[in-house]
Length: 483
Image 1 (cartoon, helix red, strand yellow):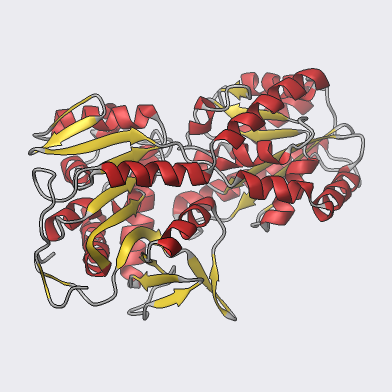
Image 2 (cartoon, rainbow, N blue to C red; image 1 turned 60 degrees about the vertical axis):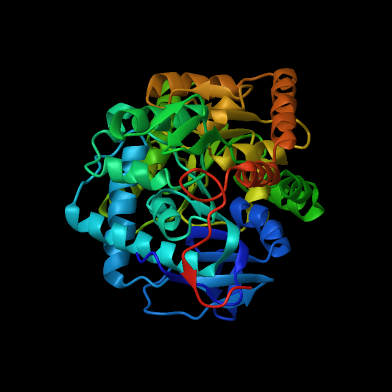
């Protein structure tokens, strides 16, 4: 991108750069999207004359910038070919599986890399144009790992933060990436690089030391005299909102209806996941099959509700996992179901948050068993909804949330027999033990919310050295009128 960036009259003091805008289009116009990131950043953005730069979600040539709910949104156009190669290709068929322990074979295609570079450059150019002098810029996630370096080159006056929402892999896996040095140097354009866990931060520093000319010690990397802070910032949820919904009489009534529909005397287990091969849904179903086959539980006393939210439905790997899961559900229901009673109720759709919280309230056991996950907020939402301190959270060891929610019942999702035994332990757990565990889990989730995450990250970024090579304030190479 060009070193010369035109600055216009109305720029943001805080700019969020993310793959998606915080809104989506409906028949009646733009609507704010649900999610913790949007709700956490929105108050800060509204206070600080914020701008959100992101893709609108459909292939289009141009969309005009617009204001919604007091936030200035700047759409980034993507062509159909770029959606295919940058988004479905490099982002979700190269980086996504690689960063999730290569639980699906990553694909390394040069014809995907070039659009990834081009789209990152477009995001960086628009962010550079929209940022006021000395602004803070928050770049989000694996789709945009080159943006910090590109922004640093164009606008050295900016404070730049980058946060990765998914896991960051160890040296042995990341080393497979043909463009490993380019990715690392792109991230080093930031003043603060944030990860969900300490392991992710440590992996990044090890990789920088091995594959770049720069050196990191502790939580800091020296980039030609400019310090880059590398920190863990575990993300969380809007605890107050989930707790409020769980206390709502309408939610309590809906939870009672769900239990009545499923059978009052049955243990209700719940899984809520995106339909993704990293989530371990098929392993979870195999564990249920083992439980039912052993005969200690039957369809009369046990039921699983599995909510699977459709995701990336045009990508071959996602078509394959959907077919595999639906086949497993059919086999389990066919083998163990009775007339009017099925062991698995499978919902392949997204639920409104109010309905989802009702399912959390209704469920005796929550199964969160990904093969690898950066954090997993469903686990935290379940805890926040359990206002009577009952319920059991069965949680994969390989989620970021397992580092915080140590009073959950931890499980290795690769061990089908072990997972079956752990689920049976959760089903049989005495109420007193449930209360001790859940009370501790709720306190942990309550103490650190998504708002604390946003405050912590922006505070560290605000304290970071601004701008140029030596970390001091450097004037932007810009032309045109400045405010």
